[in-house]
Length: 485
Image (cartoon, rainbow, N blue to C red; front, side, top):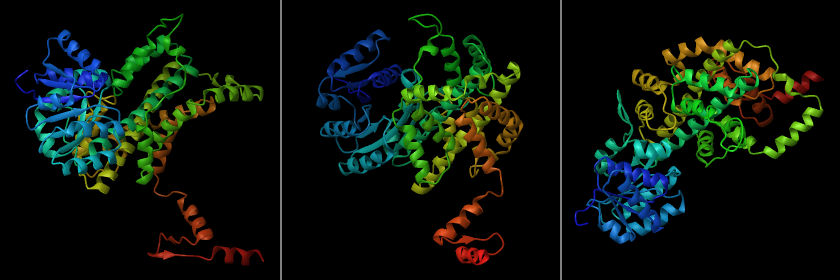
């Protein structure tokens, strides 16, 4: 191979292979390298089978780096953490001033910020790029969230614009996010929103199945129907698919045989930790994380079920007299209203971080690049984009005139579903905390005055008043003691 390739990719697990094939298919010759060399041969073989794509494999890091045209750009897709540092060390030994490294993994944003500085000292450029869409997205068009060196982004903007998912009315699902670790941060929050979405869908399923007594066939029909309206999205679509799949190892449906224990990689946890650090309320995302923790206690839950059954807390709570058709419609509305709250929380978290770091992130543009390719892609992201286009300073999605109207129209159904779930003994932490978020946010006055009075009583933390400016402290204890005499 005498002619240099346009770009390199290192790290050939499924995501890496698929992204490399996607790049090659779009007409960009690509060099690939992996520490375990069998993966290199496997990728080159796939490239032949999938249309003689211009993928060139290398077993040696030096030859791999040398094969790429200057200024070189290399995407790395290896496990987050120290494997990334190791890979950078291996490759940068052969790279030259002005070359660029792009980390496409789910990395903690501060690690990216550290690496931007470290590789800059060697004269190299660095980007941390969020990639969403799973294996399918990587192969046929993901949503891409690159952050870091703008100069580095410019080197491969032409490639990213073609490789990303294409949405007919709003273009390729990629944008330069911002400096430092902003691309990784935005991808992290995307994953937090995804946790919330999945939890809310699971609660809708739980209420419909446990209280509405819907069969898997009926659930498939309901979710397919929902996917034609305001809830049209990737996650609703795959949920409908799941309900239709029969068990390959026995009778019935596969979904009923899956153990009710949800795994996680950590991005949801990071999102909730960041929300706490920034004092941003993200109760829907936090509820979804807590639900995953509780789902992990399968053995304990099995024992608890026995204890409470024998104490008289029975499953007959779910035997409610419900109008199925009405319930389905109510749950649809509750799911949509809850989803608005979850996205509002995610967007506010991104904005708070952007303000703290001076990233200047554009929320409408992020909503646009999430419209295709990624796991949370949904029709209503277009409406979120328009809300921020109308008012970039929008304090919260809930107060955008269109979303406010939609929540108001759905609040009765939303409250009915949460009440029904509570009375039926079905936990809906995502829907309930979304509703509590809405009810707290829309109230001018909260009982926080009492909490602040308590803080001043026992810790002299002072308080402000609603009628006079300034800080005040009251000797509550002394006054109370005197009145008791």
